[in-house]
Length: 93
Image 1: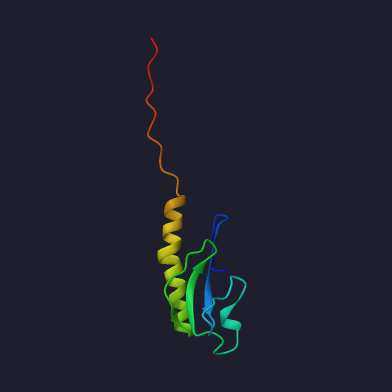
Image 2: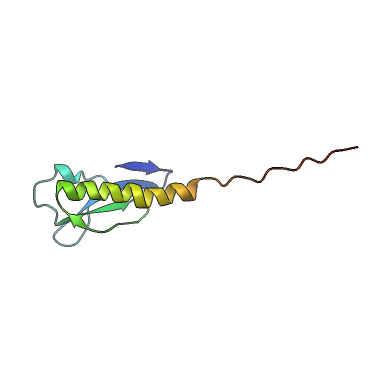
């Protein structure tokens, strides 16, 4: 897991197996045997998945960057409360 935002967003790097299926958030793709995956993809437990990158260290780093700069930025923007307008005080005579 690379990041957690609220209870519904757990970001991770998923590995794509040869049959086209993707690994889950519990799989550490860097610890798996070489050539286990054909590609890496940034993913989130909410169902979001980013583009595919080569199954290399550089591809893993690019997945992490996409997670942070695209999905996490979008999630935190949606979760940030909007400022309330200032209340007007009415003078009572």
